[in-house]
Length: 516
Ligand code: BG6
Image: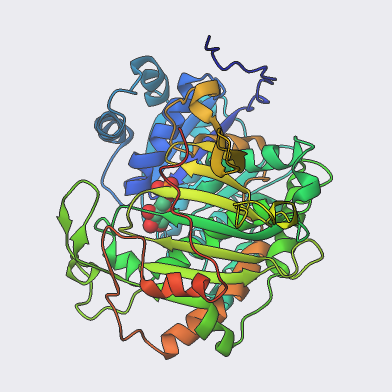
């Protein structure tokens, strides 16, 4: 007899959002149509937006509100095929407005002030405003400064103003510090919401629940029982026409200093005292601050880079090398792959390596954390045909098919003592189904409610740069000569395998072992 998985869920309705207006800077750009409007549409579908609500798009386009509505309607239909809900869209569409203008022009910010007054009159949005800076990073400081100069950032008992800032937050420690300073000259830290869309993913948030709502894992979550931890964020996609940005970024700036470090902090942090934003963020910050800084000599042995060449991806298609992608310099030294060994130098983790890797055009799309436990002592099996014991592994998969799997040894049936590896699997979809979402819904909703738990604090952003900066410095002083060094459609360069082989370990490319 088979039984359907069932779950005893404890659902709390999310705290409702009060009246507010949302202003999107860069409203004619890619992020708005691909993510922000679809996320607002899903929030409207789920009844999570307040009735007194409006969205004001701001961009350098000769559009009026009517034109903006038409444009967004055709974009959203293109980006949400199958998931488009007319009713939710109609509700949202009637709340869309547009202010044309340049970020440099104070007049445009006066027009924005007038529009905010107008939407308050029409929709009773009050004096609460969420600003979303979906702009190129060089505009972040100027927009914040213009908002301040126009008196648009009050935060008092009459209303709140909050500013969501997209990545990248600086390109090194100095620029991140300077950006923090500029923002804080207009805004208080509590008004700044630095987004990392990985924190909007359900399964990333589940890391906190998995670790801290279950009593059985915490006692073994430390250097006594854990041999090492692997964090993989592999993408099958290439640069997808974003080479102008990617050429100035590379894998470390694009993925490691933000998304991978978020996963690292959540997997390694101490239990916070509460779910209060600062309690959680204090503990995450301590993890980054505890990472032992690498000397230039360390970088040479503990960090490796790669760039993809032409190759065949899983669909059977031959894809071009990174250097052949449009707008990529023919001798580009930009890394499309990075791997490193980090040590978190605290009482819980001293001596336990954290191996991180990320790359584009890899063998598959895979975001996964593998906690590799220490082997049991062999002594009991000394006189048996079992020559070695396999370690237990806990595999936490975030993408593409979310689930958690515990790997352990079991006796193979029969008269001879033989061990086999077996899995205990939990697949998210079996229990909770999966609802279409962009990953931005929770983050936007949280910012409207004033909950900054899932946003990065200024000090953590700086700590992250402190960890990667020595690597970036060595790599820019010694540009890679061996690129391209891995064919598209593979698990990365040989140097990444050697990084682990030196420690007697290897990467787990486990995509096929989880049942989900
Ligand atoms: C973005 C990076 O932040 O994350 C992209 O700029 C990358 O290069 C993307 O492709 C990956 O996000 P996801 O949600 O597809 O894993």
